[in-house]
Amino acid sequence: MTTAQGAVRGLSKGDTAAFLNIPYAAPPHGAGRFAPPRPHEPWDGVRDATTPGPNAPQSERKLGSVDMSPYFGTGWSRGEDYLTVNVWAPAGGVGDLPVMVFVHGGGFVAGSTRSVLHDGSAFARDGVVLVTLNYRLGIAGFLDLPGAPANRGLLDVVAALRWVQENIAAFGGDPRNVTLFGQSAGATIIGGVLARPDATGLFRRAIVQSGSGLGAFTTEQGARVTRAAAEALGVEPHADAFADVSDDRLVEAASRLAGIDLRSERRRDPLIGLSPFSLVLDTQPAESVAAGLGTDVDLLIGTNAEEGNLYLVPVGKYSTSTAGDVEDAAARSHPDPARLVETYRKARPEASFAELRSAIMGDALFGAGSWALAGAHAAQARSATYAYEFAWRSHALDGELGATHAVELPFVFDLAHLPRLHGPAALLGPDEPPAHLAARMHEAWVRFARTGDPGWDPYDIERRATMRIDAEWAQVDDPRGQERQAWG
Image 1 (tube, rainbow, N blue to C red):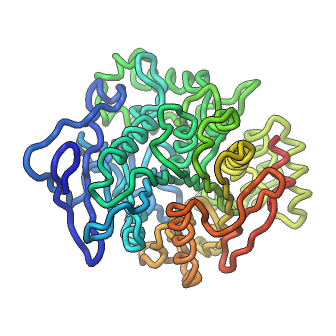
Image 2 (image 1 turned 60 degrees about the horizontal axis):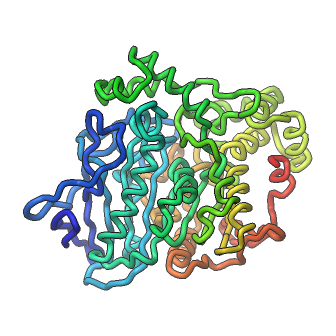
């Protein structure tokens, strides 16, 4: 296979071909870590693309007692040439196939193409060219530094999309039919890409899984993180000073930034203290879409029914939740916490303190921003909007993990059968999920990429039609209307 930079040799397994560790941009080292992505130099001969490559510098990431290693991957696999893509395609040279480009999650500080949950074999089996990508993380990717462009990790994603436009036809893909999709931090990045005029025309459709159109920090909030990072490293808060700091020190410093209070009189922390990194924008992606950006792209967007459980159950903070914990979660999330708590209690009269706390946290992180982005996109009526809620409950951790953040991902990639995902502390728990659920959800994502229609009614600002995905699927209109309205 030949790309614009040179030839690559992949591997075949049955009817699927895989090409791993293909560069889409130059290695970001030294001062280049804080510069826009640059084209990769061509190579001579045939580049081996049969084994996984390095990934972005990162520290090991754990979430209490749940095994998230299939999600985050194996941690930092060292090497400078990590701005790369993996490509899965049907073997045999079939052309003009739909293309899907996946952006991984990990709180803007972790994750990579090496995660077992990002294996694209099932997409290739079903006639899709699947691309996964690495991007810069943590300080190198998202610290807002004077002397450096903002949101460098997002710029990497845009560069990867340009690589797709230039090269994907060689793998059988149609560059005119590209779907950009991502989960968690990756989904929030997609919201940012939607709002960039320079990304227009690079993709035709987008899928936002548990992201937020309201998840960006302001420049003032970003500056607080920058000052803290500079103090931790003992350097001036400028890209020139950071350029001399090693990747190891950057990773170590990033791990010490958790817990910075980013709230102000006018702005809440959109990540409620869970991560010191996000996009840094003075206009939220949902607001940019409301102004007309990104509305020529079909959008599929949704969240999971119990997103907040992942941040409580594995660390022993769920079942011990009190009324004070509910009020504290609301205070971190909303300018009128008392009204927010009252709304959730009315909407969920039988809910425990744990369930209320989790619901408020989940909507602060993902729900409110997803509703805002869906509504902004649908109001433009220039392209289709679809919504879903994933409600199948994992029985991991004594049945408490539930339909939590990230639990939908194995179903999208049709990998729910993987043994590593099953067990009392594994993401999908000890029970087998419904046999058809992964096949049907994966099929809906493929159908959306191919046709722009996942198989249910579009979302509009009147009905807000939403597909509730569980053992049985049911389309409902505005299923969280009362709580949605509380977020304004």
